[in-house]
Length: 507
Image 1 (cartoon, rainbow, N blue to C red):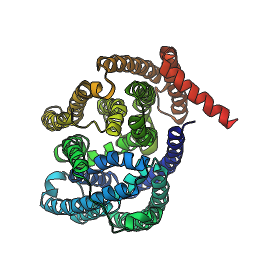
Image 2 (image 1 turned 135 degrees about the vertical axis):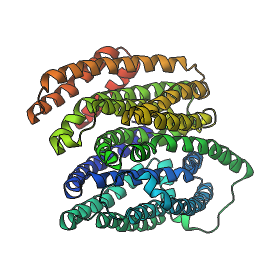
Image 3 (image 1 turned 90 degrees about the vertical axis):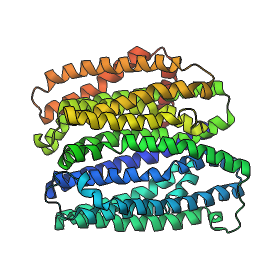
Image 4 (image 1 turned 60 degrees about the vertical axis):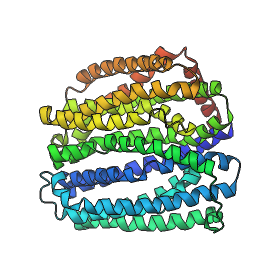
């Protein structure tokens, strides 16, 4: 196994272990949260998380640009150049922390506009300030993660984060059971968050002692020029991404109700957890892709990308079907019918999840190759279309309108980004990308239709037994049909060879 695959496997293993432990704890925490506090507080929790996500636009892609610039000096073990980039990164992020603080405080007078029908939830300004504090303090240490990412050692961050997040959730659950107080729940997270940041700062300084050195060489004019060019393009990408992915809950809260944000957060918990599980694998590969782009031909890069994308289709396609079929029955069994949202909204959430998933592979290879400029204005178009369409449609058709707006902009991205970047990445026409996209989507739609028909028969009544049977069906049927449809493809044979190698090692 190559060193790239070894590092990817290690990163993926620890990330998955962390993910499963975290999800189990979050599930317990969410259950206790709902029964101790109610859906109104869930809405506040989801809303403020998104508001602070919007404020993160101040980061403006600096981290992504520097991650790209670090690949080469890390591969060459050029310590002085690493120090130069990390020094630049540190001071940029400290400036960002100040900017977010100022903007965040300026938003306080407008909180009542964003929070619609919150119920009796207490002082929302205090809650918001705690969220703001947690976000701002992150920027004083998060820049250090770029170095372990460039070295393909993401597992270091994963393990540290697992220990701290586990401790935080356990104490939060205990606090909820004893006091049933949202403020105490938030303060526990803030206190443990500060401890985590102090620990990370000390640990990374010991891991990379040269980062504490004062003799820092300045970047050359050419290096600064490349970095600034990347950052300028990423500024637009970042604004677009934030406007698209962090505004749905804000629009729902302002035009529907904050309580609805709480109901949707239960679905988003499962979608984001599944998405994170898959992205662990794909993000673990990012450092390896950077190394691939730096050392291999475009022809070989294209072969690897097709394999990478096929695995992405399989994972996101299968999980889209599973989420669409199983989420609502599970929530019904878990916390009752009163926490269920309309089927049309669930379907729109799942379609958006699939579309985002199908863009992950292309976005990751673009990031690894530093190809940000050709499609930089697409993100801005996405943001404008998303806000206009979502706000316009929510006034006409209600809650589904928010997600129709999201899908419209997502379609634009899925079409325009490959057209603008495929030739640069692989010296090939993007038509090959769309041919595969059509084949993959057709397979997912067909299999979803089969599973949906079976669900109507098996789950005429939602019980634990019928739900268990449906899980078995959803696991078996999509994977068998996908294998039957694509077994002749080189990408499928490669995936099968990886599985066989993995099984042999276990023996």
